[in-house]
Structure formats: structure tokens, C-alpha cells
Image (cartoon, rainbow, N blue to C red; front, top):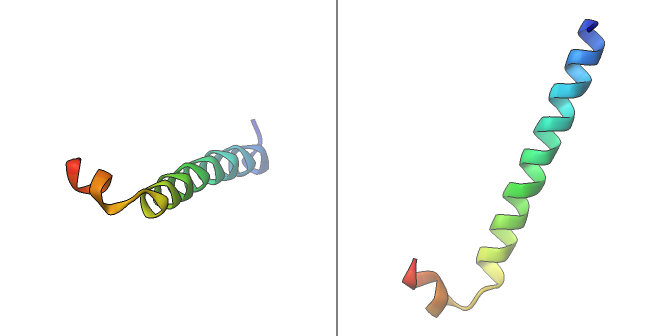
Length: 39
């Protein structure tokens, strides 16, 4: 694997992580506060 391919692979993994974090954050903010306190 070339360095460029490695960087691209890492970038894709990072993008996936950012997307999942954003989904978690939006999910937490859209939920009513009552369900948030249960956790």
C-alpha cells in the first residue's frame, strides 16, 4: 500500500467516526431531557 492509499484509508475511517459521533450528538440533543437523565 502506498502512503497516499494509507492516508485515504485513514481519512475514510476518520470520516466514519466523525459521522457516528455527529449522529450520537444529534440523537442526544433531539431526545427529551427525561430520557437523557435515565442514562
